[in-house]
Image (tube, rainbow, N blue to C red):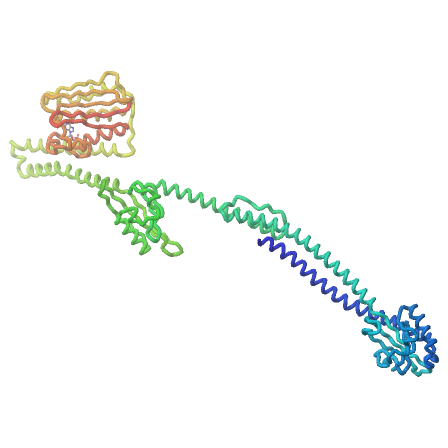
Length: 590
Ligand code: ADP
């Protein structure tokens, strides 16, 4: 619609300019030509009048000799194609080339015709007016007829003004033709220019429509060097810039999205109305909701945790970051740290970002560490207190008590040994836990290693009369750190002896399970209560603390076993029936 308007506007502007110009030209031409033609005719008529006046003898006029004058003016009038009239000084018409002689005397007096008045006054009379006699516009000139400087009458020449009008009419016709030609030219030129311009503008419009729909891939073909061409270049440049910017934003969006989705911490984006904009997969896992279900809902409706909701609403209200620790009791106890930060847009709070960090494990480890320190202190304190007590007793005089002093020293020795083994176990445990540990892996025969370990505990076995059987088949080899596996056997056999009954047995055997070697250490001892089975691999965990201490245990033996086996990418476990014995096992790669 607009484009058609443009075409019409252009054509109408052309036509308007043409009409105005032509009108002006026609107006000037008409005025000048009319004046010019009129003056030319006037001067030629005056000249002719002078010639005619020469032909007329004053005497005939004086005598009013119409018989002579009439044929003369008729013949002269035919020759010069003019109306010739002779008037005497009283205004009486004596002859007229357009009237027969008989009608002359009836003609009215011409005394008051303007040109006649002027001629009779001695000047050249000129007048243009409508002739009622000939019924057309006429130009009249009159000259005085003189005899010896005395004016005796006037000769008057009249010419129809038709020729002037005819000339003007022809000029007007030419101007009109010119006008029509110019209008047709304007129309053709306007249509061509408009069509070309519209074609270029259409290209721009088509591309702009695509741009407005977000498709910045197309470009405008630039085929002119004028302002439209420049517009096309500018639009192309703009599209290129926007396309580049969109690509950058998309790339940044993807990166942010990837970070958002892969974050271990849960992230919740909330708008200023307290409604959820988005949550990441970690939040989906923590709260068991889906992003698509949560988006658009109010915080409490979607997350159902009033502690976090309170933090979020405080942040939205005050615009200051807040963090707090919250705990879930159900279904399992979990501890979270919530950090909520306001999001600002032009210095106004536009939302809040809440980051939920699961710190259950950190808190658990902290508890373990605290318990461990407390346990170590306690374990060290008991023997140290005893040693201190007995040393004091000895110093206060018991040294001379020959019956007991040896006993006291033996007790001090026992406690020192206990302290020593405790420190040794702690050192090896801390060494196993440190990241620097390297395993000296070698292939060796498991049965032979066990033989060596058994020979080291022979005296202990004898005391309790315990029978031990090495049932590991010959030739079973494992690739492991031999010294450490030897420690595993030592600790397990040591326990199997300590917690065995008199005349009991210990049996060690192995079997291959899915490409790995599973080793069992079975005893006929006191067994482990069901409630303790899961915990005995913990540091310092003992079923019966007093008995363990009495037997020189530190409560760290099984922890060390577990660490060594796990360092070999293996696993440990126990099956036990209280009162009937235990079966410890560990798995090693072949
Ligand atoms: P300890 O120095 O007390 O032996 P361990 O870590 O080796 O420490 O063992 C932890 C606890 O596990 C022991 O105190 C004991 O209660 C239990 N335990 C270990 N081995 C056996 C076993 N063979 N039979 C019965 N109880 C055992």
